[in-house]
Image 1 (cartoon, rainbow, N blue to C red):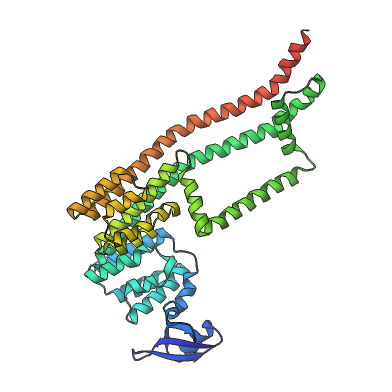
Image 2 (tube, rainbow, N blue to C red; image 1 turned 90 degrees about the vertical axis):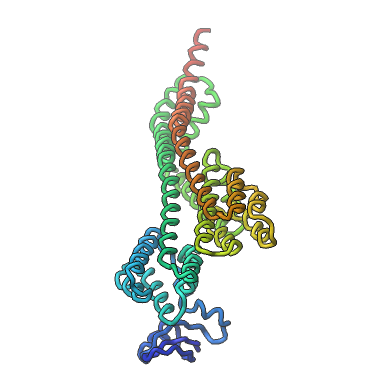
Length: 414
């Protein structure tokens, strides 16, 4: 097959030429033998826009770079730029120290593109979903203003705040999940080992068992039959796996993702936490972009795409066109129906005073505080709720076991 290649020559020139090779690996090998460095390649006949991805699109299909690793990398890059190193030299130095193979390959491609004359923001944008969508736009703002190092540090602060908020939410959810798993395990142990001991006793009593006792014994039989035990659990496991895979596939579709994220927002107690966290993501992203000098409408498009909850994102997206048509930003947010009254009032003040980025940062901080307070309240409720739940389950088990005995004693008196 024929490839249209953009290559660098040993004398520093960048040229395009046609090369015949069986695949991309053979193409790279052939150009390396000739002393040429490959920047971009596309198969002949593809549109030129495909060439902007070229070899880089192959990298973009890999898994994302870990957020924590990307955060550390940006901290080091900002430190090198502050020390006065040229951008290309800083990229070379960090490429030598990079151990992650995926990040190293991507970083090598970015370095080559910067060396060929592309801007750093464009080089990162080519790799699409590997990096946060907010990042190339922030870099573009830094390149335009000549404050690349300050913009990177601002992005690092933004990333730290988002990571910290996510860690608090996840940490708060660990304790309830552990309690629920322990409760299920205890109920299973009672159903498998304790309840069967009473079955022989019930058979000798020769009385009609109450409905609750028959249900308890039926569950115990299902979990405890020796011949079908493996098959029972195999079907349960296969059913759970099939349900999880189906839900995951459905959630990967645009409509499914919106529906599943909408379900998350309606979860009792946790729904408001997820809602406020999504709003905090939007406000903080938008504040970061506006501080970097990005105009409101492009910043809105990028900040909306950075919201992790698809249901919230779907309600914000139509309001971008309203702002583009000249409607006040706070009115568009109010029309979405997902923002709190406090958030809308603060945005309105920010628009009137020309300090929209500062007000959005304040809104994000306030929402983060609300998330933390609600998670603390949730934790304070989890333990008593689980104790009540376990008390009800154990009470039902005891009633199902002792009710036939009381019925038998009552009949024996007559």
